[in-house]
Image (cartoon, rainbow, N blue to C red; front, side):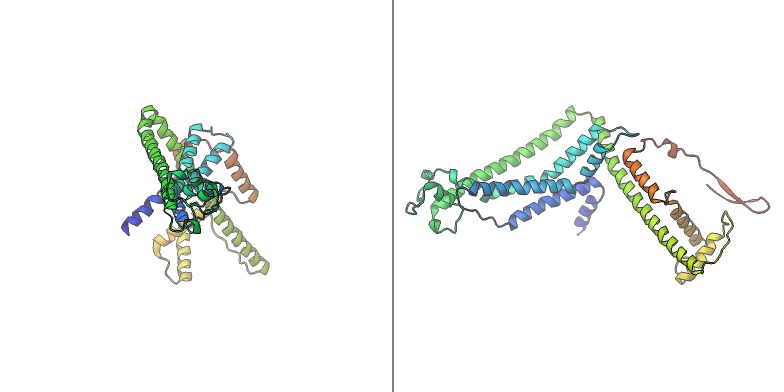
Length: 358
């Protein structure tokens, strides 16, 4: 159980790990689909090869596009490729890196399907049993009234009465299955060799610093998109909350139940304590009173007020979203990193400082 938790934590660490987990899950789904799929060869010369090639090719295509669809790198790559230049230049190396990562993950499930079909051999037997020379084997049924091509097309169908308890059908099936498994193991060996050689040779010809830069900026784009989506979700939630509150306040004004309340500005320090006490009375004293509760409530209230960032109309929100796509911000955070901090000192009526906020 602990190992399972560690595996789940690894796949939840970042988007790359999540993409790897999704691709592995797709590969397992491909194996499960093939094992639960009931393959029935038509046993007709004109349809055997067509049906077999369809079963071997169509599902991998579906799995490939499904892998492209669920891969997060696809969205990040297309956004970077299609966006206008604006204040930020495009980086072709990052687009190529994201495309390569997306392609490698999307090809995993189709390759698993093809390898499983080849190692199992049933589809290969259905497709190529007609190409076997029957003279190579003994005990071929010769009293069926069928030509050789139709007879060999029925080899995959062990339930057929012609090949009932026939050693000829078993010999032909073993012969074709050997070729199928040989091709499957050869493809698997070739893929492993190419991957191992590529992993060893690439550092010899690749610029390590440029590779790290490409990886960094591709990860930056993914994180930037995720943070922007989170910020938009927070803004939408606060926007909806204020719209609902405004609606209820408007209804209160219409009913004439609204009372005028005058508060000094800026708010005095004790305002937070009164708000905390009111919250405690409403919640039955379970909200954590005292000084800490008031200060925390004030901070929470001020944070809510700042979540809208002045975007209080649909036209402003639409303009902000359109500007994010057409004119991405410049990659320079010097201004906000070295922004001067303002110190506010609270004084009593005699001018003596009480406390300071920075």
